[in-house]
Length: 140
Image (tube, rainbow, N blue to C red):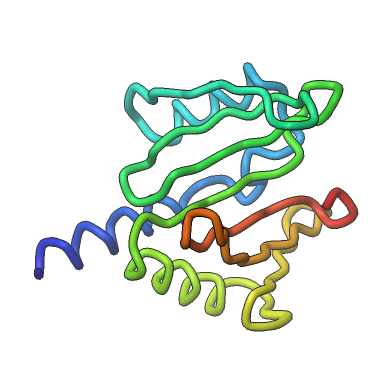
């Protein structure tokens, strides 16, 4: 149990060390390069087309399943973090509550280098899980 808690905390610290830009406003190549650099290891990306024909890429960071969605021009517009466990979910909420501006129990704002990012926590009913959706304000 102690190892599980320690590994979760360490994983979340690594997650929080990601650039505040959340890999948004990048081309697919730029995003893949940045994610690979930040994770410090080989990342297994899954590329797919979503319902509206737009591109998405997904990967696993060990604690969460992550997705990056791209617009029609191939620029990343939304970042999704789907925690694998309730413990990871709760730790992320604590981190967002501490480090960012809490708008509500399920909405935070982050200001970084002239850009405002909205973080929304939603329940994904089909999977019975929660996910954080992050986009620059005005892009959602």
